[in-house]
Image 1 (cartoon, rainbow, N blue to C red):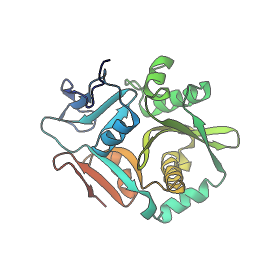
Image 2: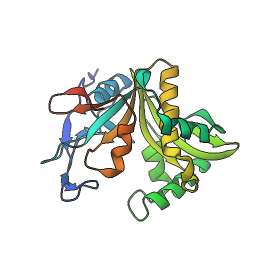
Image 3: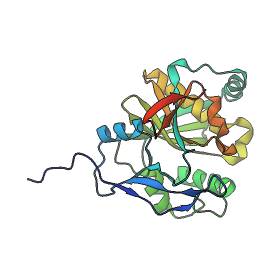
Length: 238
């Protein structure tokens, strides 16, 4: 009987141009794709600053930069400020529904509309449903989706992973025509409520880059901690 490997081999990706910071070179530390990542292993990876893109588990490991930091919200201490409360009031007609992970044409159409406006012309703006499924509709760990709807109209979809001490937000996409509702922020607020309702401690929110303007919104969700890959510990950000 073959004994299963208890710890994965790690590989470094080929260096490439950083998509977030001008003039920087990016690289990732990758888990061996042949290694079967169990939910227990995924818990350890998340707690050590790794993230998931489909079946690829990675952590930034750039040659000259350490700005990419995995961040998490301490949900039981989060108190929404005035701007968040206004968004909640504006969206009081939005219902949330949990659903099983899987491919749905309605989701894919919303994803295409979102990518076409937010990432027009880049690798994310791809009409191939197979690539979408590899990215979001398949998982080796405990994953589910939430839908936000205005009546029957789909406003947003989030893909979330269960981990031992919280939820990990994999990706959210929404109707770009409904920007006035701040659907991206609303999705995070609903995720915080969901995590708190099941007595989780954390909502893992992906990577934050201090010098990337597009990611400054994450610091509005407080208390926020970031993983320091040098010290191998989580530290308070704001």
